[in-house]
Length: 404
Image (cartoon, rainbow, N blue to C red; front, side, top):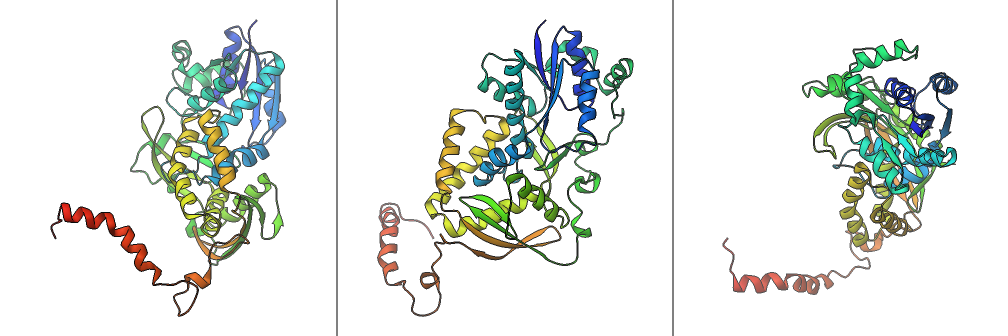
């Protein structure tokens, strides 16, 4: 009997896929990768998988690794897909594949199955990550298989299958939208959100954040400390990566920070609409940028900013385990060596304002920057600087005079 590892959530799709894979002759090992998803009872998920016929079932807590080794390097890049999306789902998928392949190696499975559809980005992230880590792995994506879709054309058939097999699922035929949550963010899409006339932030029930209109009528300050571009403390308290994100999720959430509604370009070619909330990471992106403004060399920062969309695109598409991305991660580790310091932000009804910033590596020199008299900057030096900078333009204008 062939053996397969299934990235298992315990939801409707993967509950059906677990049974269907067994119907297809596979011995299945269910792996629930805990990234901070909301779940009342982790043990119930294990029991459900085992009762559903899984050869083995396990939960792997990867929350700390997700924040430390995946989210924080992307933060150092200031990477946002199409300038706004903080990549919370995209970052998590290569880690899920990595954990599932580690289990596959342990149990001797030669196949890896997931519940992503053939329309979305997750299929790309799961498969590209898996094949880069193990070129010999067989990736099973039932939603891309005609045989599976003929059996389960929609949610009605999925629910009927679960009822027939006595598989407990919390699902209904009608659902206003779907959501995906981890400790970094929650994404909302599909259902009513496919209608662009619908107000997204009024339609979804946010799980991490309150509406900015319902946030407190007072400013809340928060101070974040960085070492080499990595956040290490909140309000003077040292925290690990996961506790850092959780703490800022709580602070940002109660102040309505980090809600966006965007139409984005999927890797497979279509445009899709998503509503996202990421309170903690939004705070970190803002604070990190403020410390960089003090500590990063101008040309180095501008080079990083040119490459940042490339990094965001690679993460969004699923090219985490590729040579180009390895080199980019090595670059950012070196580029962030001086990004150490502390910034205080004021949070107020969805807004972030800088209150103060300081760094032992600050390149800001008040004696040079001052607009008052004196100081160490000789303004006469600018005359020669501008004559040299203007030389190409003067030569070109003599050859080809410009009309004005």
